[in-house]
Amino acid sequence: MSNPTTTRESRVSRTAAMGLMLLLAVYFLLPVYFLVVASTKPQGDLAATNGLVFSHFSLFENLRTLFTRSDGIFGRWALNTVLYAVLGAAVGTLISALCGYALAKFTFRGREFLFSVILGGVLVPTTALALPLFLLFSATGLVNTYFAVFLPSIVSPFGVYLARIFANASVPQELIESARLDGAGEFRIFFSVGFRLMTPALVTIFLFQFVAIWNNFFLPMVMLQKESLFPITLGLYEWNGQTARAPLLQESIITGSLVSILPVIVVFILLQRFWRTGLAAGSLK
Amino acid sequence: MTDLATRSAGVRTTPGGRRRPNGGGPRAATVAAFVTPFFLPFLLFYLVPVGYALWQSFRVVRRSGGQYGTSYTTFGGFEQYGQVLQNTEFWSSIGRIGLFGIVQVPVMLFVALIIALLLDTPLLRAKGFFRIVAFMPYAVPGVIAAIMWSYLYSPQLSPVVDLLNGIGLHPDFLGPGAVLWSAANVSTWLWTGYNMLIMFSALQSIPQELYEAAKIDGASNWAIAWRIKVPIIAPSIVLTTVFSIIGTLQLYAEPAVLRQISSNISSTFTPNMLAYTVASGNNYQQAAAISVVIAVITFVLSFGFMRLTSKKAGL
Image (cartoon, rainbow over all chains, first blue to last red; front, side, top):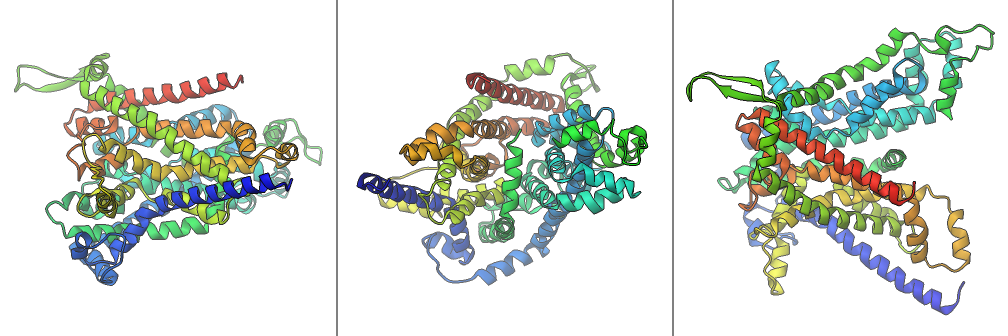
């Protein structure tokens, strides 16, 4: 075990492994580091100074410009993003949990068929839905409203799939049976027993759906023309398209990007154990 | 196990000896109350649009009475599909995305696998840090990732370009040949950590005893990784490949952002960009047909890949 060749070999592979991981870490951190540095610089220094080195610290000025530009439209976009992604994911998680719990714990006719239809939905790419939804929504006058983005966002077939797995794994049938014997209604059982036992799993479902909505650029782009309804992603995209005419926007795009990804990164790090539960369950297919 | 319990609940009797109506399950109305809050929006915003797109793809717009006559839509059979298949822009977008996928997906998954395997060995220190760093880009939406990288590609602002200029290389990340790979790099940056975490979760669920025999026989970490671990997590690798194929065919946001700073990305660069461009020209029927063809190609490729790999594994 401890002969000299193995130790030397393991020292070499230790160094190689660390070296490779450090290199990859630099790759993953580089754009974020650039964003942090660039958002502390005045617009004039962006092209004039090295992008990886700090210069005149003007982060607070940049933030003021960002939040006051066009009557504070960025704050509006941030609020919209919270409505679409946080509220949408919360509602989506609740309805996925109800449906997944029913699919796992109730016996009823057509259960397997219903589950197959929902599972088929997992494979439908959301970008393929945006254009037909646009036509349907324009016929009903929903285009260019909050609901045009919010309503399709609450539907997550993958969430139902996860909820069913988690309900099967974490809610014992005996507990439900004994609650029924005590005379509790099904909803009461769900909220007092099922919901509580499934809570860690529901956090995972919430996170997945939050990212899906936060990432879905195509749907708001197709649905919304009114700037005041944009999520951050669409707003920054619009600004980015105007930099040829208005180069001063660059600093706000950079600061805006940083402001919008930092809170999400922090939440991700704090909740990272929930990702692993979900990804492990997701790969059990 | 629990599924079995649910199924057998139909014949179980309560401790009191009474048979519960409907075998212990709740009434149909209660089931509906649990299922409908999801199923109704699912029907309206998933199933109906899919059906509507299919229906639209079989319609055509015709004019009566010359160029200024009234137009009307009517059933056109496979006419729209014929036009899609004859559209050279459609095929070049498919070709571009095919080349992108053949290179980007294996590179990304290989890097993800290497990171997952390294995190699962005793070789590394600060594993938690590396895991978070690799996964962090998943928190960044495609649009913002593309904006960040476009600053690193821009000849005026990029410190990377400065650095490479300094050592005598003069890269043009936005040039006609390079821009596809610049977009591929954004996707790789975004999704490597996510795929890594799927593989890593699978590695973590392998019982340690499986390696112990190999370790006692003096097998190196390297041999254990490739001969034992990789074959065991093969289903996860297949899964990440299928996710990546689906994602590649849907590509939109990243090239759309790069298009804002590079004239080498056309409005029909990817199949989805083509569908959007066609729809913006009010040709919804043609756009629907394009979307259906993309969806069919996606299904065929992902199922084909799953079949191919499960056959190879002798399952």
